Image 1 (tube, rainbow, N blue to C red):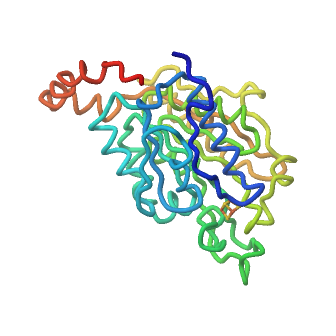
Image 2 (image 1 turned 180 degrees about the vertical axis):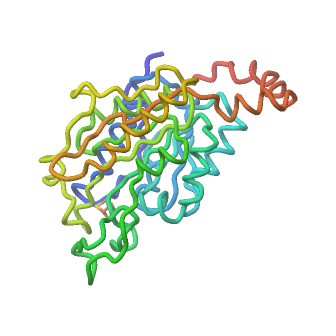
Length: 296
Ligand code: SF4
């Protein structure tokens, strides 16, 4: 059976504000699942709290709407119990880089095989537009009474330090490019982060569609090579991280999107199977069950 984009949609009304970047991200996820021909019952989508938290309601796979900032530990636990499933975690920048910052770091260190997509709009949209951890200091959106007091966090830089093995940035209004990033992230074995520039037209009048349209460019079109070709070579890893770090801080007239860094490393599942043979055996015993064709 071939799956079409419509097979990953639901009948739930999508109630994001008109023009919200979330629509582009949702479309890209639908299209990526169809491109990979993943059976819907083999995919689970988890979300935190925020506008992005509604995403699992709009995707016709298994889905769980978790707690604020807690999407990564829930998705991690699910993946360890169900390694046969494709796991996608989604959340906003406030949810993931603020409330759930500790989990964001731990996920990079663990390297469980899952994809984490962050809807990054610089504000807490669901609660009327307070400054999020990615809003630069001194910037005043229309939802703030005063310019932002705190320095912004750079998600790409933090992910490099935390050990993420696939780090990318997408743009919500370049759906085809974002779809390709999501496909690559799902195919990557390990924890993949895609930070998505996602305009919030309701509360953020600074980082708008027009702002990003005038600035974003694709790393892959410049000859940039994000891949660590010899994962055993620590020197190459450091060099590739340094290269990615420079790109992460390129945030003026030109803003790069694409894959910043990619390396193949053992996943937490690999480590557990090696060190806890009974864990690996238990999963192997379950394999015939997982392989059953449950296509309706
Ligand atoms: Fe989108 Fe902002 Fe509206 Fe939330 S508040 S749905 S992020 S436009």
